[in-house]
Image 1 (cartoon, rainbow, N blue to C red):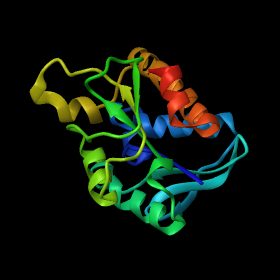
Image 2 (tube, helix red, strand yellow):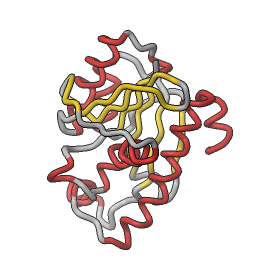
Image 3 (cartoon, rainbow, N blue to C red):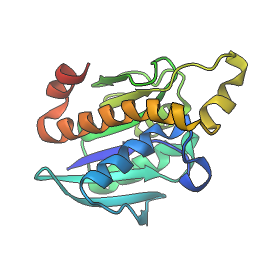
Image 4 (spheres, helix red, strand yellow):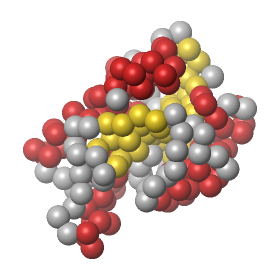
Length: 185
């Protein structure tokens, strides 16, 4: 079983913000496969079923970004999912919009959502996809930058990265992390 997690903040208030790239990728996958992610379980919006002949869970934690790990741990532990089968998707200020980066494992860097996930799972050994959002003009404005609404024009640019990440997740589901990294990095 694979657990695909998109990090973000609850969408009613935070839709169309840079910090919700993980949610946006999950939403694109759901649209492609005509899935409704509506079950509220484990402090997250949850769906379980078949994608590309594999058993998959799609998860959008509803604990707010900085506590995402609590939700991810509950699902991983309940379904006894191996760490290498937990894919986490999140925004990254160190990548330009339209860019993605895929890794098998690694540190959370400065991303508080990923810090929560690595702390709660007590490991950094799980795959992840970082979706580029670029840096704010002024470093002191980081919080407003990641949770502030973006223009339609910028949203289109960010959506290019979301589309690439969606395709990378589907590749991961079909063929695993090594093939995905070779194809998309």
